[in-house]
Image (cartoon, rainbow, N blue to C red):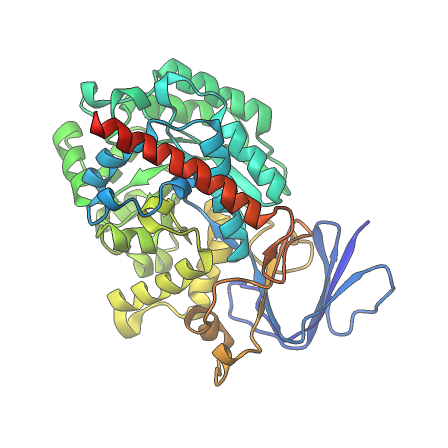
Length: 458
């Protein structure tokens, strides 16, 4: 039995429904569970003790949308300053060379960044399987997550509609529907854990309305719902181009298409959800939304209707999206930008800082169907972050909830605890050599991008 005692917490922020911040309290972790919260918990001598007199302690952030492999394709000059569709078309020409090592290293880099910036649970949307051969790419993501010690919801993405069938991606990166369903079933049977403290779960995630058929959407939903707690995920209402595509091809709006193919319910969450009408909000009630602030800004996609979603009790979360559209896997920065974008759109009627922190923690847990994560309370899982607020960047701060989303000159947490284990300590990853990972990832990334540029010369 392992124990960690957080002693004399400066600011305890549980992220429960009602705003509550407590000072000078202790928290005891026993194995992977929060076993006790209270004043002056007695020290028995078998605990690892962390003096929290300078720390704010809150639940870990939950990242509900990402594309890990894109961490290897950041800041490519030729794809900058482009909206979503042209951006994707150009990047597919780099991504078609994906292999196991790129996927593994991309996952390790992205997950490492996420852990260092406060994320304790992440999903990922991997939908690229070049040459119609899965090559166990998802397995390499799961391997990376286990090595780092982060809780992980891997989504088995798919693309079945290539250019020859009227879709956006090149034919060399799409798969036939039998291959998609066969590998989806394999991954669920091999890795999916429906228990309350699961470290690994599988979801199924056709890429988007413009890269899959209606048939694969329906057959994927049918497969997922044969299992316990296998969720569904896709991009939705990200751009006006997508809206026009759905109207031209299917004769309806994207949300209406989701309703038509049976993709509505508490077991579904969508990335972006920017261009949703009032009627769309009614259609989607029960399904969750992953709000991706930085990606939406960089690609000029628009601003999510966060206040309407939150106040209508539509599950909403915060996500970093892929590194090529965001260029970082910085979860804390997304929390800050979600707050600022909300106030840009809604002004003085915007959400409070505590609301944003709840969305980033408890909201993410609800979107992913996790009911023992996202809140700090007894008998909940021990996923939490510790942030040093006794430094100059918090000087003069009179409200710590607003301080955490508005102040600070770093996005690095001091400690990250996942499932009762310390995975970040003093701002450094515990389970990986960061310098060695940088060297190996950079070498591989340089090779694959150079290969594409050399191809263009001939």
